[in-house]
Length: 134
Image (cartoon, rainbow, N blue to C red; front, side):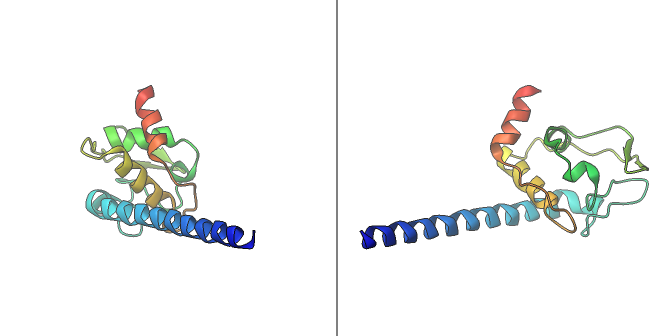
């Protein structure tokens, strides 16, 4: 009895380790995507560019629960003037049709958990659900 409980505990710990490693890997991938596709406009600190590119750090649009809007913006782009937290931003966001669903989930998870942001991670299933509704 004690041996089986020990095996269960060890198995559980191994599973937790791999889950944590997977989440960390997703954030590493998200950071790489951010640095390649987002950094030029939104800056290394997520601060954006005044009157041009909206900030991602501390932005209500980034940490709120409207994941569908974020997925659509990343996948399909956005070409309208943005009002955000009392300021306006006018630079168009280019679409990213080459990003896979997992990549979108990873980059959103990275953005929503970087700098001062603390929000839930985004899953591939959530990205797929948004794309099905479009």
